[in-house]
Length: 148
Ligand SMILES: [Zn+2]
Image (cartoon, rainbow, N blue to C red; front, side):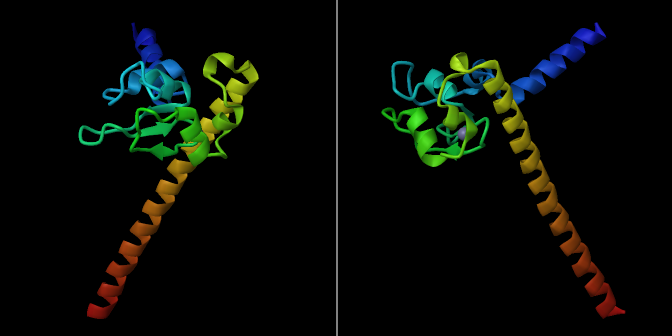
């Protein structure tokens, strides 16, 4: 029983990085455009986007590799073109092909790029939070020195 729970856990962690087109498709809880439109959920997911919206702003999507977030989509927008236009440096854009048309090696490369991007984002957040904490402590100490 326990090992199956662990297996479930690790599968859900993989789903969270939206490496698979299927997981990206499932991430769209709401989306303004239907399946017959140029920027349908399926085409968004194919071009690397997962849903990053909220209840108030439903049309926000982000790339699972480069993290580029785009909003204000229109039904005639082509997800691949928009991705290329706003994030030409993205490794997924450079391949420019749907998951089904990638080689195993390309897929592994994308996975590495995705993990690296996530790691760097976490690192930047940690660094920013760390600086803020140090600054707060410095001010507290200054106050203490002044009052004594
Ligand atoms: Zn991207």
